[in-house]
Length: 216
Image (cartoon, rainbow, N blue to C red; front, top):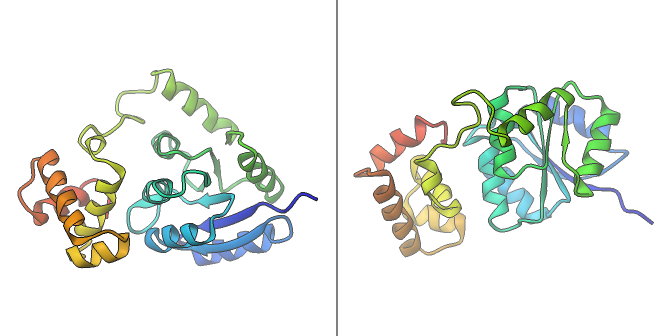
């Protein structure tokens, strides 16, 4: 007997989450939901769903921060972006981050269930218009600036980015260590590495740098 796909829902609009849960509850097993980056990462790590339905724009770093935070420890979890945005840069950003598909919120409940199942089975799924963005991006034919990587951010490891976001949000080294389950000494090492790579002098400059890239 085939078991229903286990799904975790991430979206910062509570009414939208309630609507999705009502529509999908008969077809999949909803193991949890969250409205911000930190809660989502903790919840996904705890429940280990088959598929995460992920909004692109979230408080605390966006959908990309959730992708990075989960993939570091649970690389087998699959992500399907579900967003109101159909902008090429949003699509390419989350696909480069590891999402297996991207559909817009205009999708019907039946098509969304089908997309979730396909992603769980290993397929890549896109709304028709968005598939062209992905093909163009990986063929190198998108306009300059769209879907391009941030060379400064790309210098950092996934863990360094995670530490960067926490420090930039005002957490102390001890608090960061507790949230990421690492030692204070390791946090200090990561911060030093981030400052060196980005050629910054202190955490105030680091916070300004992160804010300028919507990483907070």
